[in-house]
Image (cartoon, rainbow, N blue to C red; front, side, top):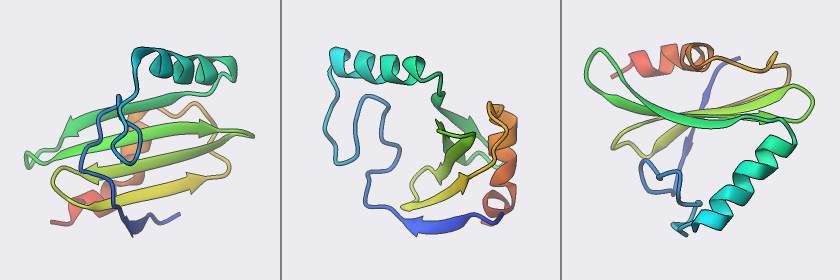
Length: 109
């Protein structure tokens, strides 16, 4: 499955403590979101990786019901967010598996 580039109106590298649109989450809201993910046993994870050429990429992995997954990659300073919806993800995916899904797009400069 090939990743599609979509234009994002979100600020680059939205911290985990913010929702889209820039609204900050207080501790109780973050805890609630974490508890919801734990209650459904679905992972919700994000991390930043520095590539060999020194570019930083933020990855997001969210498990979806029925073995689905939503994954994204965004290069720091770039408005483009690459996103993929996997319907048969064989969850849980490792960070390496998520990163490998975007290898082709991230190799372009």
